[in-house]
Length: 497
Image (cartoon, rainbow, N blue to C red; front, side, top):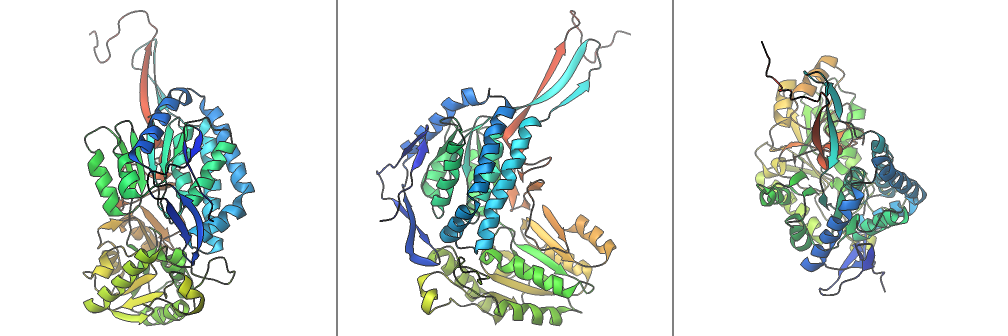
């Protein structure tokens, strides 16, 4: 009998049974049920929001350094439980163990960083134009946040949202993906163990089309932070428009890597493999478009294809595995459908494109690393996010042509260029139309001390993670204060001549 994992509402763990429960299964072995969680009702969501609303009145008044002490304890608990959580990420989501541990490490880094914000949370003090008057701005919390997260980073992305929301003084209702609910529950348990007051962080399980929608549209929710598909993100933006909610959506990508004729070709191949097939291509920053200068195109394609063919696919818990399964049958079918679309559009399938079967492969959702060539920028496989181990290789006639190809989609999350020409790197920084730009590195690998997010259909609203313009801006509001201690009426901008 699989273990049951509960909602957390007002400090109490509970398992509502109004709806049939949800099973979370290991995508590498579907006979392995990782856990069972409830399919929550709108009433469960309502009680969670009311709990967060009630807790907000007290939590917002806790001094930020005291809030930060709890986050430091969460960081220490994450360190203590890193290997357990990393294995759980691999078992529930499918990514290889090194990546599962990296998922947890990112949460550790974020916990320490955001705990440090408890003593920063800076506004500014500026001089007044009038005597005996001072002027300052301070950060204040916003209220109750709905945090809705995906399955591909089941510890890291919740950390990106929950930790800054809490240190800023907000309260939270957290709705994780129904594909990775056990990871989310184990993560929330650490906040309880660290001593977070009841009601400050609430957890409700359920599917996005039911629980997620009700939560995002709840009238007592002051802000929504969402990571997931562009389609769902755009629907959330529309539903919250005009009603005063803070909304931040981190959505899809169609990320390019440019390989120029002067690139370190071995480094470019290695980076492109990691960006294309790491996490089985199931990252918003994964590179699904490789744009290679014509002078090195053949050499790059030969080396890249051979390396892709030799990637070891299997269970992520096995030490020698390079690429794990897709998350579920639906996603596998979607990716295989795009392979057929690419072939019908006239792209040439160089390698892969098939579901892996036989032996251990029959237990899960495994697919070959897949490479297309002869792709044109108007093809669907060149424009639409596939979210799987499928990459298209383009031939570029020049640096200018490569930049044009890189910018030719509706997305703008991450991009990269491999070149040894410092002048080209400067131009690429300026001309690549994306929120993240990498020089001689792949499109994946963002660090938590800088903002994360994209433009166009890749993102809307404030960025995630740290640094100026990051998550603290999402979860705080600037309040400006003028204090006149002159004892007389002074009128700004009104001068007695």
